[in-house]
Length: 137
Image 1: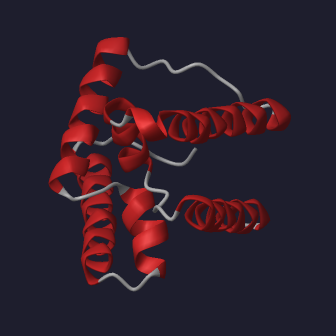
Image 2: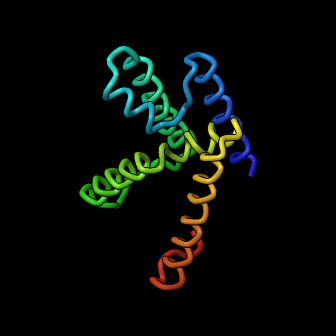
């Protein structure tokens, strides 16, 4: 539980620092999209994205839980495209809506976040009860 609290505090602090430094929301899909389309802010956005990857790698190595994915690369590519498509339809990703939008009191972000949570709950229920997937780790 402590690691979850610490992680949440760090995410909130990073989102706040990014907003103070740039005046922009720290939604990862928006940052990635901007890095691909907007040359004038590319360096700052790529630095943010590199920091996300580096922090994840450092945390995994420090905790001793680093591992490679057993999922096939084509499946990961299709999943990535679907996530990207969903973020365009939803006007942002879970980090943009859930962390930044909710903290600003955005009604659209509150609805989007509630939808993310409800969809996740339904997916878990279907996967665990109907498909027999999952179980305790």
